Amino acid sequence: MLVLTARFPISKQRKAVKKRVNQKSDRGRGRQSLSRDSDPVRAKEPAAPSANQRPAAPGNLQKKGRQKDSSVEELSPANQSQFLASLDPHKIPAHVAIILDGNGRWAKKRGLNRSEGHRAGGETLDRLLDFFIQLQVPVISLYAFSTENWKRPKAEVKAIWQLLNEFFKTRSGRAMETGIRIRASGDLEALPARSRQLIAKVMQMTADNQRLTANFCVNYGSRSEICQAASQIVAQRLALHARSPAKACLPVSESEIQAALYTHDLPDVDLLIRPGGEHRISNFLLWQCAYAEIYVTDTLWPDFSQTDIIEAVHWYQSRHRRFGGL
Ligand code: FPP
Image (cartoon, helix red, strand yellow):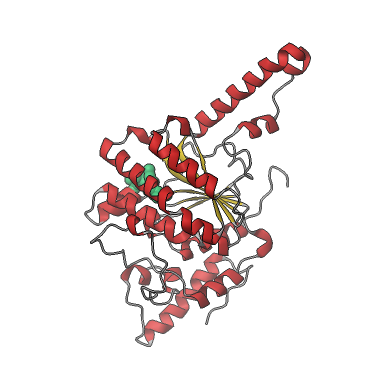
């Protein structure tokens, strides 16, 4: 059995795993899944857990009649502990942000419509959410719908909002069991009343949960977030001007801006994960990502597994962060 240490770089892990996989297939015991065989790190995962081992997505996120994609396998409990032990507990990112990209391409590859890709992306999030608790990551942010996404065809926009509404409506029970605080960032006032109510309800219900904060960025754009922060500060300064004109004219500080952001109570992003291979930030948490390490992978979001998350965190732990110093 392969034991990975915290200081064992991911490239070496890949080589070691590849060697092990080659030895296995030499013995005629190669893995069955094509996608896993072509990826040595994925090939280290055991056979897919049986249905009763696999955490189920909420019923209404799983479309009736569609088979769950069998190429995504999660780690067995034994491998999970082994991999978790391979991480440096002192270098766990305080805030992981994920751009949920690649749903459309995932669907296209399978001859499905884009909405099916978003459904699969929602299932993937549902499958992986609790894993961040095991990783002891305290905060994750998920880019689920941008202010620019309204430009997409009406049917796709509707499908995404149906999925989000289903998620906010049904996920509160499990969030309460596992201790997840669900919150949202974005221009929520501009959302349809139904979505606003569902988001407000799940935020209120889970407000005291402390194991993981899941920050859903919906109708979110970083530039518009900064504009609304600036507007708040202007309003505060105008109010202050009557009492204290000198104070009202002081330069605006970083902490004032931070306090006026949607994410005012969250730490800066340490690790930004971008599935789907695009090398851009797409107007996501620009202020908060000032010193984030950016991890880009070709894996499409619906194909993401626990192994992909661990790979990203391993990579993050190998980075030398200088924050502008030496
Ligand atoms: C980007 O992929 C994804 C979105 C714009 C929507 C993300 C929404 C979900 C994952 C579904 C709902 C979420 C939850 C939390 C239930 P893309 O369509 O741009 O993919 P492409 O680049 O392959 O076309």
